[in-house]
Image 1 (cartoon, rainbow, N blue to C red):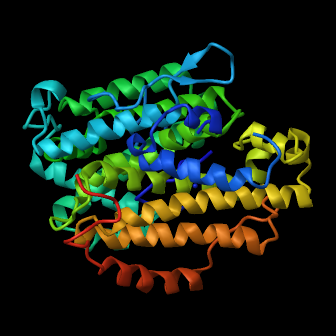
Image 2 (image 1 turned 90 degrees about the horizontal axis):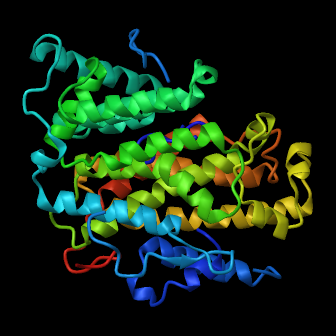
Length: 419
């Protein structure tokens, strides 16, 4: 499944028992509260509970206040929920941003990036990243032109790394990719974070992570998502699917927010802004999954919670048959409702970003959310009809996104909460 890049481009937990065991809701991340709200609504209606560019090739801060152990479906067995794993990464990145200066002793980043040439080659590397972004993410690229030069170059570098990573398992050489190849790609990632890039495109990202407080973990987690795609084609429940969505899309928000920046006047906590970024990634990937049900089924993959399919009276055979029934429509309505709830959560964080960064994010959110409307317009036939947003609707959305980007964070209060 193609990775859809969270803040970047609109192109592609657990059951209620787990969340119920976590204790007081005041300690839960916004996503936990969102999931609990969704399940409460849902419960009323259910009975139970690799890669080439220019020839280059691939040859927790502190613990969350709540107990990290939660009950699983097996009696006596304990495990860490996907939500807990992800939130710990959010806390680590937020703490890094709060310190403002990157701990060079931890990441071993050198101020003089080792580029085969001189500074003109580094500038050329950024320009190439911009060309790739302009080719594959036209709408977002247009939005980045409103950013400061340093910020837009950094976002281009992140976009290109994510795209190259995605092509490992979803590009022309995907059939030849092995876990070992992903291990080599991760070793390259660690080298570029240490100021030792392999090629020019790596050099652009290496320079970016030196200039901005970006943690390596989200990048590693995206690679882990690629590993998951190599070995996993079914997801038992939403907890498993949530973790996958974080790996392949939610990670991009954690990579990008340090570059996009939080508005100086924002009263929101750093953690809450990152949670909103994460919510947009989850929403985008859930939307991507719902749009591509038919295409994924042709490849023998089902990115839908198996338990929820069963509760709706559906089986794998129904997915492969690709027949739209009332049971399928009802199931899709619930899945779309969940995705929209994540989009709603994401909206609360966009206004907290720096003014020059809001437009591309709003454009991504508004355009991608419209895919859900198109699925509904197709009578929930995502087996043989691909939901897409027309050029006319995109043109209408852009000025709306620009208008929304002009709304400044409140100086007196914040819907995301204060520290």
